[in-house]
Image (cartoon, rainbow, N blue to C red; front, side):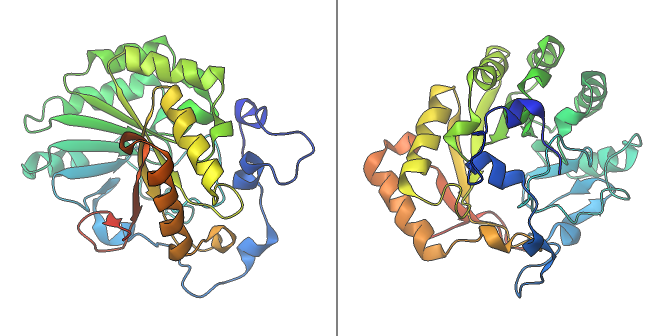
Length: 284
């Protein structure tokens, strides 16, 4: 169990059903095998091209920049990923050589773990090396730290974003409106002021946000902070996370309710990730 104090401070003291607490609290059911829940639910292993690099989709390559994260979310789809042997580390050459050879790669995604667990000097080194690749047009950063540890979005980090030669997309991860507070708002504001486009992807989680009002609150609150709703994922069926699973039927009902209650730009795409698929699959 790992939870930053900044995130824990938003939990309701004494409420064992708090939606933030439930995302990080270990449970004995994690040790019970459930059919259909596997170690690699999204096919990361089959898309690995070299150490620390996944290439699943046309035009995009994902770098496992680090195995570290500031919070251990109990539903994380990479909780069984072999980070010790397969993250980018200090040797950037194999991943950079692969990206240089693949001229279709217009976007590089920094993921992990959480790329903001690297200090800004390390990120700047990586960005500098990527800037030499002529066919890269965008940098995308997938991170939970602006939500769970907003102080990480400091002046140096924002200056780095602002100095990058491409448009920068930051995709944060929040599942409930209560994950936002003034500190998170400030982190998002600083990234936007540095020129980043900020989006949120959420996961539909049983007993956390699997109801209409919670989802509406999440979309409204994230947009008030300057974040555009992007994806609402069905749970990736990773071993140990079965207690968070919801039905496709409920997901579709809730998505329809969001369409009825919110303007279109606040309705995220309802998707599932399937190993071997050429893109995130719309849930219809």
